[in-house]
Amino acid sequence: MNPVISVLFVFLLVILNTTVLSIRTVSSSDTCDPANQRDPQSLRWDLITVLINGYSEYRIPLLQSIAAAYSASPIVSSVLVLWGNPSTSTEILSQLSRNLSLSSLGTASISLVRQSTRSLNARFIPRSSIRTHAVLICDDDVEIDRESFEFAFRVWQSNSDRLIGTFVRSHDVDLSRREWIYTVHPDKYSIVLTKFMILKNNYLWNYTCGGGATMAETRRIVDEMRNCEDILMNFVVAEETNAGPVMVGAERVRDWGDSRNENGGGGDGGRGLGSRISSVGLSSRRSEHRKRRGNCIKEFHNVLGRMPLRYSYGKVVDSVGEQGLCEKGGKLMFCDH
Ligand SMILES: *[C@@H]1O[C@H](CO)[C@@H](O)[C@H](O)[C@H]1NC(C)=O
Ligand SMILES: *[C@@H]1O[C@H](CO)[C@@H](O)[C@H](O)[C@H]1NC(C)=O
Picture 1 (cartoon, rainbow, N blue to C red):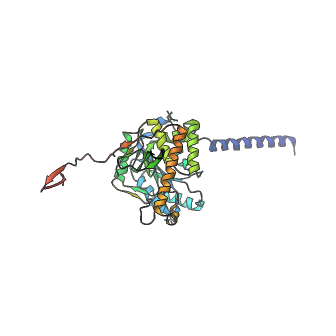
Picture 2 (picture 1 turned 45 degrees about the horizontal axis):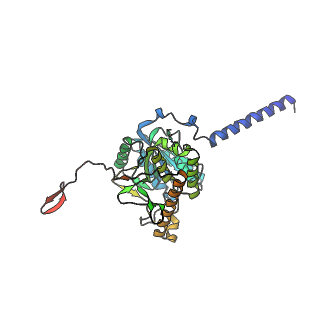
Picture 3 (picture 1 turned 135 degrees about the horizontal axis):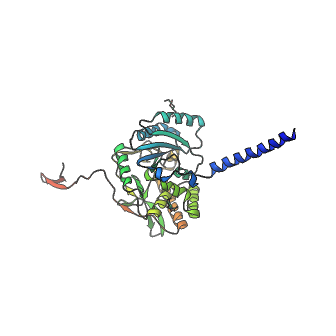
């Protein structure tokens, strides 16, 4: 080979190589690079971005109708479907992507994002495509009526540092065993589930990029347990606010994944565990679930060295009507009746 050409050739190879390398570094690192973040000043307060977690192929028709319903609301900026099931074929995904983009009923676009990792932490990755301060995180099997959704967003607007949600749980201490547990209290709560959770965009950054080695360790626990990313988000927000979440009442909400559904549902927040229901039996499965979630609370507490979760009481409802009791015809009944 002519020496000039071969020198050029080597030179080209070097350039190509560095380009390839630099592309790889950019894509694999940095969700957390401040240069890749949207300027907070440019984010809107009057709209919300909806992130729907998709996993089950058999639930695609439901997912599509839920995404379409959100896209019809004037408060929605855009809808992103985060597809977390790595076994779904490219063919189905490209069909789904096309179907979703055609199914928008309003001005909000619907797009499909294939998650590049199995990690449950991926649902909280900050995204430059989010152009709003408010983000709704929800599952592909939870339907909520539009008025309740818009009401929840208004509640968030006046409590924008808090977590807002409709499905709540609690942490507590089991005094006899002296350990943290995951439970349900009739009158108080400290955890909002990601079946329907509204939060500030910035908390995605806090979860994924903030908190140094301590947060990295808690995210590792989520990966190891393959569970509890929602609980960890509650820890992150409670750390920031030193306050509990806000529960909003919903008029009509349908949780297709609730194991009390007669069709067997899906259960675990779209993790595709539905088929195991029949073999394990519901109640033992539920108590196993609680135990695992309690272990997460224990481990997060160990790593942090403190318990940031705070209780809240009551729920915010979409009405200021008084419901006093009056005596009518010798009976106590609501005065309005
Ligand atoms: C997309 O829509 C077509 C036409 O309605 C339907 O046949 C197909 O099953 C859909 N595919 C997916 C993955 O949603
Ligand atoms: C969370 O994000 C806010 C705003 O960027 C920052 O001020 C705060 O220090 C972060 N917290 C953590 C624990 O990273």
